[in-house]
Amino acid sequence: MLRTAVVTVLLLASGFAARAQTEEGSWEFSLSSNFGLTSQSTEYSSPYGTQESDGESEGFLALAIRPGYYVVDGLVIEPEFLWTAIEGIPPSFSLSGNLAYNFHIEESNATPFILLGYGVGNAIPVFQRVYVRSSDEWDIPVLNAGAGVKFFVTDHVAFRLEYRFQQYSHEEKSGSYTWKSTMQFHNVFMGIALFIPS
Image (cartoon, rainbow, N blue to C red; front, top):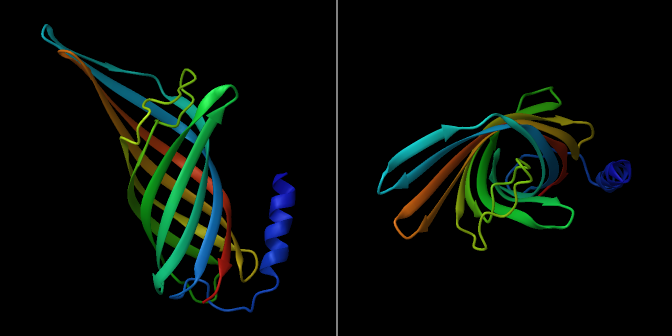
């Protein structure tokens, strides 16, 4: 299936005229998967005191879909929809508004970029102990910060590789009890991007 998707993107890209792809008015559509390690710290507060604990690092996998529009040369507004699911369990989602700046390098097929964004979701998307939805509402904030590079294989198709720091936080209250959880992700997104010139 992945090979079919890659071939389809390459065939679509071959019909566009060649030009710089990070110019104002251009579009970028990317699909990535990511994997990495995460760690968790938990704080438990009650009238009897506060307890804190740190968990072990866990591995995870997720899928991200991003349509992007270049508002000026190099600067792209890039909403991101992140989806995770396990068979038989309701999926979890998050939606972020990201800004990324691409650095054009003359005579190079590599375009480095930096990214910063913020969003909300209904879960912390990691398969830690079959981690699923943490909320039925879109009330879990996520902070995104990262850097990466796009390697152009044609004028309109690039492989996208990026490091991403993400921080999710969640709080639950029940009577006089409060649970606060913060998870920090250090991970890598890998995928493919299709560029449509202005």
